[in-house]
Length: 163
Figure (spheres, rainbow, N blue to C red):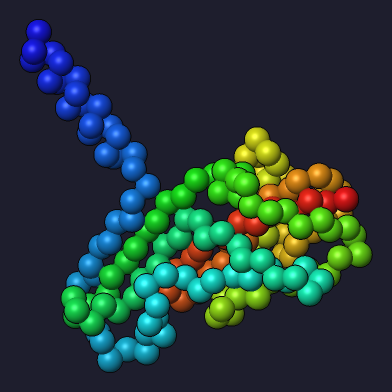
């Protein structure tokens, strides 16, 4: 009987551990520190959303990122998971906007490219665009920006209340 309890407990711990959203760092061998890496940061650049004159910080979601680690003497690759967009936006303040609202995305470092996904409250993708689209939306809407740099890619999330 004790063996069954021990076995079930061990299996539960292994399942929980394997599903944890922790980051996994993988060292990449044979890296050249003399390369122009432009990856001083261990995380992707931040994203600020400007709505009229108000600035809000977008939540950093899942990302893949590589950088040169002086201590390790080589490249390190990080893969971070996150909650779905609607959960990540959670209780964040959703500024009121309308079709005439000016919305600008300001990255700490300009990406090579990005796209804007629109999600409904049930985490169903409604569309993917080159810019923030307010047309055809109403109520609390979750926007996800997926940006790409040489060092990796990152997902950012912010909610808007479209009137």
